[in-house]
Length: 263
Ligand SMILES: Nc1ncnc2c1ncn2[C@@H]1O[C@H](COP(=O)(O)OP(=O)(O)O)[C@@H](O)[C@H]1O
Ligand SMILES: [Mg+2]
Image (cartoon, protein in one colour):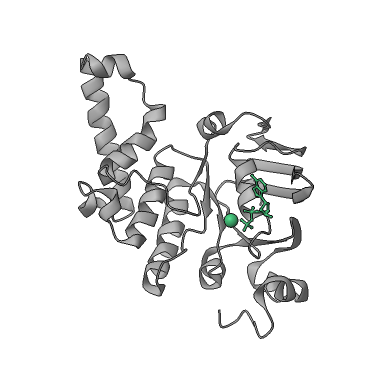
């Protein structure tokens, strides 16, 4: 029954910074529609995995394949064009621009009009500009941000800013969305709503999502597969509810007293 398309494959990737092996022999196979969680203590190498998947760093060893094609050393721009999009642990928005302009700016890279036609205000410019506005509004609506469209991004409540980051990431039409601690700093109600949003995005766009998160309620609530990283090494992987019960996971990350069932 497993006929979903493979989107990304990591084959034994490692990276060292100076003497430190930040990620060591990481393997991952992401298929269309997957919702995968990556957890582990601070400094485990989670963000470094995202930096390799999104082209920020090239692995020192191993290979990454997107749609079967090796993407090692392609760099962020090309990897993003090939369909990998991400959000960051720390919010990165253009605070003084409007919410809708933040989304349109993220879309810009796959718009056909260029700076010249923009300056000359050609018909094609206005047409594409209208289309961009329409699409940006659609994306904002999906994330329930449409009422903020003309507000400055920096004035939004914290939870809405995090959602705007996701809106920007979706604007590039990714096949794979990487979310780095999307619920960080959110309250319980915002986190609950975010879970629904993430699931809905996956279902609507049929894209694959890998997320890093410390909130175990979110992780267990939506992830269908879980990887646990510790000191750069995957120490457990599989069904989330089974993974969180493993002794090595409890002792490396979750702490004793963690049952997993009431999380
Ligand atoms: N650019 C870098 N230069 C040097 N060390 C780095 C760099 N990026 C990450 N590291 C180190 O790699 C390790 C893993 O970091 P990171 O991936 O950010 O962990 P996590 O996201 O799991 O908290 C840490 O020890 C961190 O200091
Ligand atoms: Mg991190």
